[in-house]
Image 1 (cartoon, helix red, strand yellow):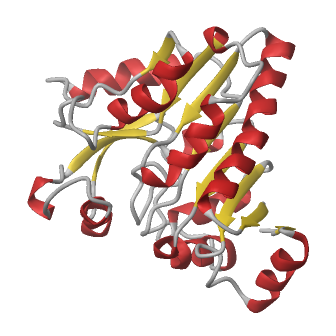
Image 2 (cartoon, rainbow, N blue to C red):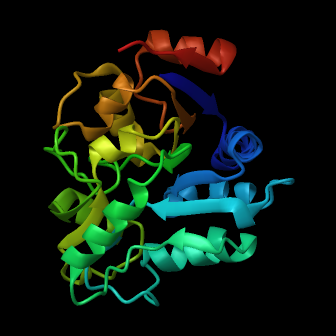
Length: 261
């Protein structure tokens, strides 16, 4: 695992986009297409804005998936991840082949089956993701299932996760936050050739510390990222603030550090 730290969200988002864009270009050059997974949430906005402006990417040859979506939420709702991705990535780049999670479908199980078939049809080149305040990846809240091979799942959202959505301003109160979601599984996330996590803000600092320096455990879903051979986590000063003094010193000296599992 490679950690990279930056002074603020803007520089972090730009640096992450400067990493992501060549990865997409490389896949396009080598394979004639690129398959990506995109994340949403306010923590991703600076990164998505920078990636949308990256030059020399033929987005018409990019196939995209996203990590999760609430069940029962209209795609026009401000918190809809479909809406966020459409406005911030898919629309600006005219990505024609993006597999949105239709969380408002009357049959979520059918949505899961269809998405699972689509994503399993070929390897994913790079996955863009975040880490939640409870250390979730996608909507795999603790204790996460590290073993199930199904690409997509119907999951129940825990209260910490739901309160995060209220805290970010997407919902007025907890009663408005859906209790279920469709989420990409942990095993499917780990199947991507490369993982790039964008994790800013003080409220993520404890999750980052547990992910990087704690035990690898389902109670800290993001900790499993340490077992992936090609993962980079982008931090800002705030999200890196609870790392050990040794790691913080290394990041301050070189702005990046390798963490072994």
